[in-house]
Image (cartoon, rainbow, N blue to C red):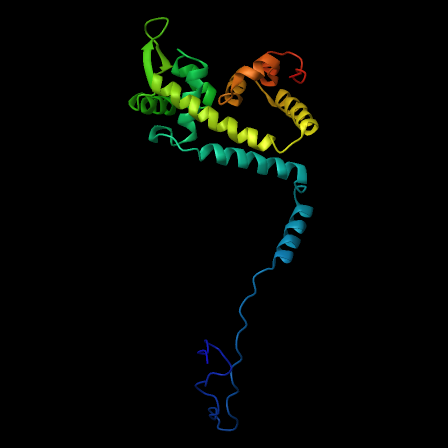
Length: 234
């Protein structure tokens, strides 16, 4: 028999059966307190629905699904194994940006990853220490240009290949017609969402830009004021 908890009606109470101070009637037994019930899933959804009615409109299914897909891609990219110097997404983004814009200064590269100057300097220092990036004299002899070492190029290719495999697996769930629809939707969204050249660098910082530039990159077209590109015929 389980031990009664505090306030259980079956537990002998201190004053139960005894006369009160006047000596007329015994003290009544204390009633057990019911534990607070947590809201069920249905009730929680009802609360959420009421909150949305009073406040902002509910997120639609399309927006929710897009957000989930964005998290799926981001989480898988961040979970890719790499050397210690590339443990975080910022270092990987800078490494890839140096590969895309070789012999660029820290000032240019930090725009590609949206970092402050001190944060970019620290990230680059870690890559240099790991032997993935080397410093060179800039065009004006006073600035410092950055380039990938042989190890940095190998690591960039390895990370790019892992990214490609992951994206190919996801898009591979679609047939040819669905793939065409998705590509057209992505072109339209990216062309409309690109704000300026710095934003374009940030959006494309992890891209394999070869296929996109050949067919017409919607991000580049938008930041250059060009019309929305057509879908690739390949």
